[in-house]
Each structure stands twice: as structure tokens, then as C-alpha cells.
Image (cartoon, rainbow, N blue to C red):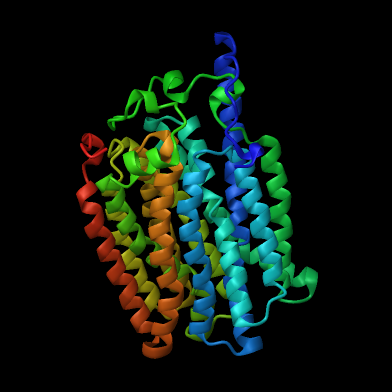
Length: 442
């Protein structure tokens, strides 16, 4: 491993009178860094969907071809999130997060020069692989700086970073179109902004509290996890083998939420990725109107995700499944209304409700992955759920839905999305009371 990527070395602890003020300062500093840094990943992840109608018009690509190219990102990202999750548990997030963002931006710039389906696929594959370097270091940072009883709320606030990032995509992409006088600017401009943000993260993000002279967060807040974990493993840097075999792969609850995540992501991206094409072709929206709906899906998720995270902490006392299941029931209703509505306002309201609710389960599964393992294994656990969500759900949302629409119309796509809501609920039920239990398999 490159030396600059290794975890920061703990330094001598500062005096007790300085700890509260410095903890407050550094927590805000690292939180803002991972929030802005992760939002930037979405500038260069979801801009392809804004460019998709132009690729169809310019080159005559079918929706199956567009879905095939889009699936490359989900496939590569899912595998990378798992692999990089394991690597990131042994890396300094300050540099790991930034390097991934810069490399993804370079791949995005190359997308602007691509014109054939195979080349677009390869560039999206590379973009997806580097995108996998985003979530795991953020998960590691949250696990080290925020204790178990507050993590659901802080995770909910951080989780809206990708909503902010994705919601800004239409504005940034259209600005790139204007600045570069071509739709290819939808790739160039977001990439340049992301490189600038990567430099910001390098300057301000820090690794662990111990690396700046502070005590571990559990000690500082007197808040220790309920899950049975060897006390020696709380702060010790674990090997990749220990993380995988002792705390992730043999944990049945991680497997339940990982499988549920397949269907959550199929719903999430089955709606989001096809908004511009569906609304333009079926509902008669122009690209700006479709961009507004695309943004609404993400902006509505911000209050929805925060409220859901708070409720899971305060009302359900750290139980993530109940709120996730409630959200999926609401998503089914919103999807049906989005499908059947013809009025622009009704469509926008339905997609806003879907966005407000679907990101609750997305976030809660991520929190659960952190809850169920030691913090030194947080990136790997999150990576496994991401692997299932992206390789299974996101790829299906892009490629399989594209094929279904070409062969069976959009009705078939909506049947698949609603069925996925039901399957999510089925796989979350076994974890309903998990926070009140101490899994024997862990």
C-alpha cells in the first residue's frame, strides 16, 4: 500500500481541558469535508442520465444500449465499493476519498470524448470503479467520529450529501452545456468542479480522533456498541482477513440487509435513472422540465432522510428495520401515482414523495451495516451491502429495465419496481428487533 494512504498515526493526547472544544471543531470539520466530498462524487455519477437523451438523439442508441452503458457504472461501483471498503478500513480517508474523486473526474472527462457504445461502456466502467472509493472512507470517518447512539441522526444528515449532489446535477450539467456549447460539456464541467473539491478534502479532512490527540469517540461520549465485539478489536487496526471472516461474512444480519439492498437500489435507480428519458418520451416533458423533476426526486429526499434517521434513533431506539419498512410501503404508493398520473404537477408531487421515502431505507441499511460490526470493519460491511445494491439492483435498474421497456413497454418496468418494494420488506423483517439483540453469530 502507498505510504500516504496508510492510517494516520495516533499522537499524544491533548490535555483534558482542550478536548471538548477541539472535539467540537474537528467533528464539524470532518463532517463538512465528507459531506461536500461525497456530494461531488454525484456530480460525476449522475450527469450521464442528463446526457442520455442527447446520446439517443445524436447516435440513435436504443434504450437497451443506454441501459447497457449505464449498467457499467453500477456493476463496477458495486464490486469496487466492496473491494475498496476492505482497503479503506486500512487507509487514511483524507487521501483515499480525494484520490478516488480525482480519478473518477478524469474518467468522466474521457466520457465526453467517447462516441461508441463500447468506449462509453469502458469509461463508465472506470468511472464506477473509482466511484467505489467514495462511500467507504466516509463510513469509516463517521464510525470514528460519531458514537452509536447518535450515529443514525448524523448518518441521516450526511446521507443527504448524495441527494444534494444529484439534485445539483441538472444545474451543473446544463451550465456545462452552455459553457462548452455542446452536450459534452455535461461531462467536462462537473469533472472540473469535482477535482477542485478533492483538493478541499485533502486540506480539511482528518483520519481518527486519536490522530489529532483526542480520545476515541466511545470514551469521550461514554457510548459503547451493544453488539458483542471483542474489546481488543474496538481500536486495533484489523487485518483484511479478520474483518471479512470474523465480522462480515459470518454475520447473517449483514446478509439480510445486503439482499434487501438489491431491491432498494433497483427501486431507487429504476426511478431516478430513467426520469429524463421516460418523461421526455412518455409524458411529453422537455429536457428542462425533466431536469426539474429529476432534481425534485433528490431535494425531497433531504428532509425525508433526516426525519427517517431521527425517528429510527429516537422512536425506534436504533432499530433500523421498522422505519425502512414503513418507507417502502409509502414508496409503492408513490410509484403507482407517478406511473398513472398525466398532470405535470401530480407527476412532480409523486416523484417527490418517492424520493423523500426511498432514501430512508438506503440510508438505514448503511447505518445498520455500521451498527452490526466493529468500527474498524465499517467500510467492509458497507462495501458488501453496496456490492449487492449496485451489482444487483443498480445494474438491473439500468440494463434490465432498458430491455424490459424495449420489449414490454414502461408498464413492465413499473411492475418490476413495485415487486422490488415488496421483496425489500420481506428481507428486512428478520432484522426488525435487532438493536435489542446481540447476534450470536458476530
